[in-house]
Length: 104
Image (cartoon, rainbow, N blue to C red; front, side, top):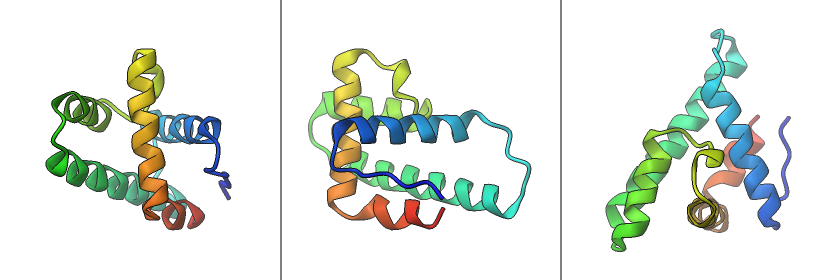
C-alpha cells in the first residue's frame, strides 16, 4: 500500500516521484501493475480536462508538459515544479487523487 499525507507540499512532491517511477518502469502485466496503469491513465485524463478548462496560457503550457512528458517533476525548472505541485494539490483538494491512491 502506498500511503501519503497530502497536507504537506513535500508529500505532494514525493507523490510525483512515485508516479514518475511507475511511468518509467516496465510493468509486467500483473494485477497490481494493471491497477497502477489504470490510476495513471485516470490522472492523465483529469489533467487533460484541467488543461481544457484552464485559461492561463502559462499554466496550460505546463499542464501539457506535465501530461505528455511524464509526471516526473525533476524534469521541470524550480518555478515550474511549483505549478505542477500546485496542480497536484488542487486535485487532492477536489478529492480526485485520494480515492485512487488508496486503492493501491
